[in-house]
Image (cartoon, rainbow, N blue to C red; front, side):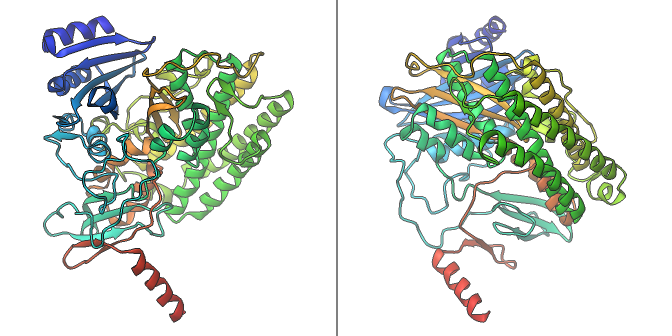
Length: 557
């Protein structure tokens, strides 16, 4: 793989390639001059690379540059390819790759905000992460910016919406809306009841977890913070971060620990898919599905509390292994619970399969072609429901998945119904994997002590198949017992970019289930966008205005 890429790069880029190296069995790093970044990315894409995410980092103190890494998955030969480049901090400009790869759009916009990088020819160079009143010239991920900086706000500064298509009106959805279970804001452009486009604004209360963990905590404290990235996929993020550091440091964890990580990841998958199934039923007004799915899910929550002491945020994963063992008694408890969940899920599944009202609300809804799914980098059940056969557990085995036998459900109807079916089928496969883990669980320790310091300035990437799709973590090791850079790309980050295409020409009444079909996970927000329906102009309400409105409403009582 490496030799083939080197030959193609040498033939097409010549002296613009600085270095090609393979750091482990599956990761290839390609360093190129910034003038060649787009052409290098095209070569990797033509070789079969699927774009994962971009990683920007501050290297100003060392050599006066800002670095950028574009990461790719080679799904069918278990490789990651990372194309790296850098630009002087005084002139941080490079060519955008978004015109070739739409899924790179958010990554580049993020580092415009967070590092002050510039990408020429980017089709939508608008703010993504920073609030609209954030002062110009302050880039939070630069190391000179304190982690606890709170700059002064500005009044009457609002996000500028995309231009609405002719003949449409704007319908605001969110940040607070009955059909949304977390705050987010969509401006939906409608012609009658037909959606003709939308604009999204999120990240309104970005928590700064990456910055915090690069400045304030140690390596083995990060997994506990990583669990808080998502209230459902905590073990996913803790495992992904730990694997990245273990890869960078050459740390081999005990096989029993790898099995226990696999167990916890599949328990999370069952929990997440049952939660989503209930929410999906609620979004289309079928609350019987909601109540039954969550009733079944509750058994798993009780089990997790017995296993770890918590219904969620299990605190099981550390760099070097896991914190708690699985005793024979616990193993039998797990078997009993998941066997009963499978039995009850089959009853719900049969009822859903035959229900015409569910079919009418989900079949042919939220359609996006396989080709568009690939172009926009869809992942997880949303991609597999559209014929894209990818799954990190199989394509890039980690933990104990190389010892597991399981199927990857892939459907081709390309709609919300297919997404529902894929998640149900994946739940059965998760139960199947759990039984295999318990059957094959090897003896031995569950943790290895780290005797030496983790070497600094090593790059590593890992991906873990979360219930929503792969979560990618990129780590650059640091010198103070903490990461120099930690980049997290959760699955919603990728899938959300394709939502406007999934909504296009659909009925407005189907917005909740189309949006919900990707199982989105958003940051919280404390701001409200107000849109004038006549003019289409938007502004942000201040805290003072919100307080006044709340008190006035209470007085009216």
